[in-house]
Image (cartoon, rainbow over the protein chains, first blue to last red):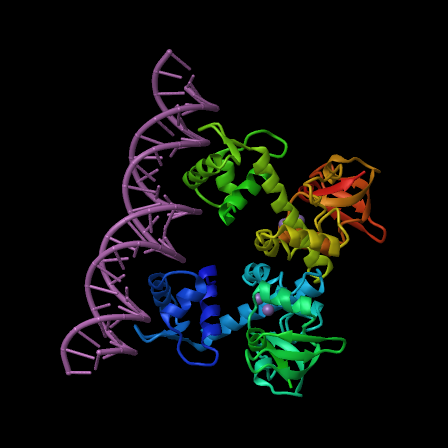
Length: 216
Length: 216
DNA sequence: TAAAAAATTTAGACACATCTAAAAAAATAT
DNA sequence: ATATTTTTTTAGATGTGTCTAAATTTTTTA
Ligand SMILES: [Mn+2]
Ligand SMILES: [Mn+2]
Ligand SMILES: [Mn+2]
Ligand SMILES: [Mn+2]
């Protein structure tokens, strides 16, 4: 139906356009690791198919049919990630690249059965919400640890940075999804934070605190 | 590493070259639903990569590295088919097209873990052998029902035709993998055969008998 | 608000995988 | 053995997705 490249563009436009409004050519070029001129070419094609709203020089937004396709790809990505972690015992830092390929397997019947097989999970291994077969999903109300103050309690429920390096670091520190934390100290000098876990105390940099998301 | 088209050519060369020797351009064109001239182009590319032995006008054979790749794709295809049937409850006539896509997911670590997850199955839903992670496999010693005579007993263990139409017909008749049959009559006029199953008697055409494989 | 900088689009090219039509080689028939 | 048919390859073209370099538009700065 749509090519692999088209699907990847739609997914990227969706991710970049989440909060803000229209997505720029350069933003897409950066995320997709390609050149602005290539992006322009593809935007024309997607506009022709009425999957995006495109006005030259003004960036793009998804049409509702474009958004539907994007959400479906994200659904597949996250369900496959869940499968890889829960059924095949991969670690959360190992699954993203595989899911990038698997999200393009076309059958919806397959993905709906996979969903059922796994008990209709609501969140993927990184805490991101999994759209249901109608594209509906609800994100947690997440805040970066860095935005919380002294003596605040929270539950680790997501990450902003999905890089393997960051996820491996969190693993090593025991900062995994579901863990309860309490902020016991904030170092004024560099804004690093001291966290109390169930079993130990650890210190994290501002950088880490910015990318670690909790539910209060 | 190799493109999707290259993988499909290698797989096709493998399947066509099983018993006989070299595979012709036209055979490949027919199986891959493409034109002979396109095949020639691709054969040059695969020869350049030393995945096939190609002499113009003489057909091709796989090199050992080409064969290794082909067998790995077949391993993936059959393991995904097994997964779809055993874990997601698809029927044996529904899985081939999905597996055609899934066989190109690149990670070998993934497929090895999938293999383990399913308990290292030896045969796919159609009775075809699944190569292990070293590419080793052993096919059953299969014979078409049509080659057996009166009063012979056998166990249905494979099919020659993999079309959905044929598989659905077999399902409806209760002629599924593992079923024990006994040939009770052969009609001289059209070579159709009467089979005794555990619970019933059915008659099949010569065409069906040719495509249904048993272990004696 | 005019000049400079940045972002975006256009123009022209290329690799890949495919096609049709024509040429060449191999196999078959007379 | 020659002619005919079949098979295969070559030549030239197309669509997709990408690229670099140049032109254009928008934004920022002075
Ligand atoms: Mn991911
Ligand atoms: Mn994820
Ligand atoms: Mn199959
Ligand atoms: Mn099969």
